[in-house]
Image (cartoon, rainbow, N blue to C red; front, side, top):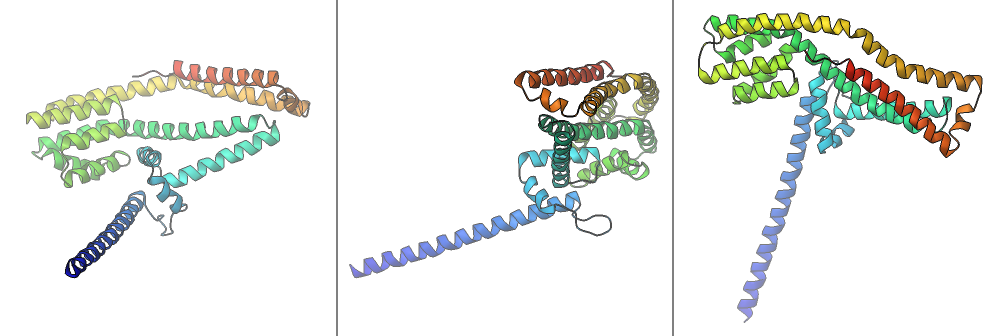
Length: 314
């Protein structure tokens, strides 16, 4: 009986020791994994500025990257080409919201503080979208030259992977930077279909989709792509000129869209300066607040309608 009890105690102690060691190893591995992910994320985002100084708000960026919205925000920033991390953008947006909230409350009335803060958040999101569209437009403008380089390289007998590497070296940003990402993905074993498909997702445009489809289909079929690329180069040149003409014709419409809400803001500032405290008295009652919300909604609706009417897909 004593031997059985001693054996049981020994087995229990051994199991406890093994379990404790397992928990310690698991905790150590988890911490090392988290540290590795943080280091890789910091390196991907550029942990230091070009002058060697550490990036600001790195702690906020690390915490934000562990969340789904933070990772999506970083992907959007990567698509814009801005030298910003998710943490920096979040802090700058929060500061913009706070400043606009304070200025609107001080210059107009307390009722306009939350509206101005919401406007700041919407403006930050619109800024990201605008930067992404601008980078996409720049990439589209380089597509004819990209197609020409690929056609010349493939006509010389080079493989498509090599031709993409040559284009990445010869073209300037953003095409050069985006193609460098594609070449690096190919170097680590990704297929041409996946790498080019991800490029089309980062910078969505009809022209890029056509080019990617041409390259992917030619790579799958194994046929020559020189003739297709040369025809595509001519087509892209014509579309480039058409887009420039359309953008010039719509410049007045876009200017009108931004002038409309500025007129409303100027009218409120003028009314409040002529009659100090007028906006505070108007927004002091539920009826006045409702009327002001309707007016702000009409101005916002007019802005969106004019922008939508002035958006022509070429």
